[in-house]
Image (cartoon, rainbow, N blue to C red; front, side, top):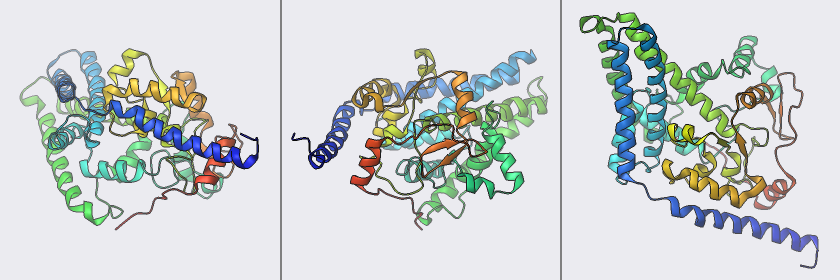
Length: 383
């Protein structure tokens, strides 16, 4: 009240704590899962996915087969969103039913249920936008320069401004590393379960591919057409959509990344490290509100059908600090073009030449909050 710097600092600190409590209290009203709604969306999405594969096998026109193949990939992505909700315990009220539905939802996308839960729950959420292994973590200029030439060119492909590297990035760098095989980085307490779910993945995918290869025995579709349009293309579309989703959820010129530990609850809350990518309402519903991502990071127990209302309230609380972006292909092109490397010391994006392409992503108030609230949890793998 007297204008002194000390009192002003205490007020800033108090306001950060008050806002954290306000967020928790405001969003708590959105937490209850709706079993009927969750089951309905699950059944509809699985049925449409199955119908798309049936169309690939039994419809005659090639153009119809191709369209349904693309649509099958979209439905795998929809099922992935529902599986994500189930993993957080939000799709339905029953924990056992959430597990059952979540495992089934991830099978068409060839995701290991246990690997997903470890990577998403134990790595991504506690350490959002950190320099540990996660999706779309940017290299520094020095790290990029030290890469072999072939790996530099691969990084250039991944971050192509035309989006050509979205699926290759996710297949090579993420799915094969952390979403399927129980590699040594996985803590021992999760390995037995992960191997069991991998066995299930192999059995399901093997049976599915066998049925596609046998297509000439029960349809007029060749084995090659059935495998390419029934599995390869849908999987590639799913990888493209998922890679796009995890990229845009945490990549924006106003969103910082951190090489060290930082308090992600009060100093720089997870919700301001997450983008609210605004689509037309019909797209939001078709994609199960997956781009209202700040509200999800603010409270992971909010079901997908409650995210729009929760995000609206969250944006009102944060005001100008909320990172909201209307989607356009121009914005995506410019983001992929400009957000390639990251200067963790000055918190700004760089191009591959090291030229800054953004202003500093950490505000003066956030710098002060980081100083006051100190370090947060830094990712350390546990055996």
